[in-house]
Length: 132
Image (cartoon, rainbow, N blue to C red; front, side, top):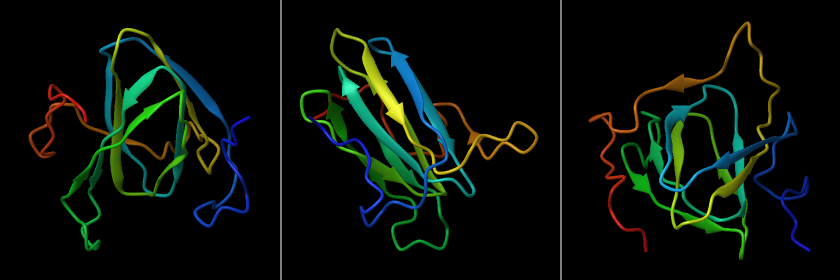
């Protein structure tokens, strides 16, 4: 048994909804971020690269990149606060099954999501490099 999300974890804010994505090998989905929403990403099958870029100008870590490699063998919950750019790329030969627990319900009248291309030069990240 693996716990995907618990309301007594210190990072937990609230439950909004649950989403699941099947991402094929080599596919990159990035970059996006939220103004208000916290995402909680869990890779439950396959393997994925999950980089974060701190776009919060008032943050002490503004402009830094942090890498995470996640897989279904050892799942963990990655909490992504508002203002932090994120995305993922399936690595290996198997698809990745990725669950997201955003803390807000999607509002099509006022979507809380900003996007730029995965290769936008404003984010210092190389999607082609080999993860650790």
